[in-house]
Image 1 (cartoon, rainbow, N blue to C red):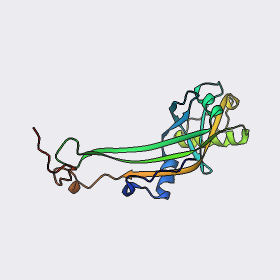
Image 2 (image 1 turned 180 degrees about the horizontal axis):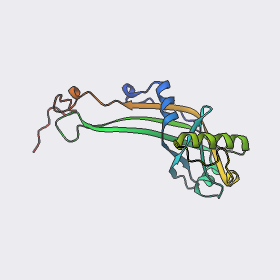
Image 3 (image 1 turned 30 degrees about the vertical axis):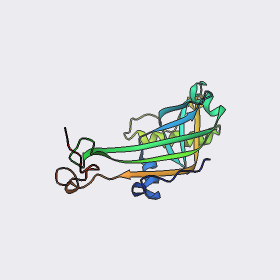
Image 4 (image 1 turned 90 degrees about the vertical axis):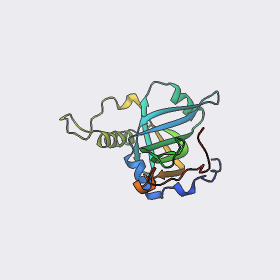
Length: 184
């Protein structure tokens, strides 16, 4: 694992408990892997945060993701919750986004254990299917037709930018980064 650079905006570091809570509730994450040509490959995926790791699934057909993981297990996973765009100063460039995000770095591994796959799918359905559809639960006849991946994090970072109170937003407050600028 490479040494993490210091976060430029240390004031936005999210406490560990809040970062883990975001991972627990996040809807969709993005998994980035490294291809044989050195280019990153990033795709959105539903996921479950379980047992201190990210679990994701895909088809058992060998495609771009599996080829990358087989070549180089290093990966990055990101989840975010955008909130609202807000103005904090008198110029258009004085605009920000309220958000929370978590980024994990680690190794992606293929999980072959059928019991872990079963637990994953039960957790996945619990997370994403909120209504009782009357279908049989805990029965996944295509469980052997998927590849289950896990990313065990070596490093996790969380950042946030809370939505400022109205009194801290334009026009009530002018927090422009270029206070001496003059429009043409």
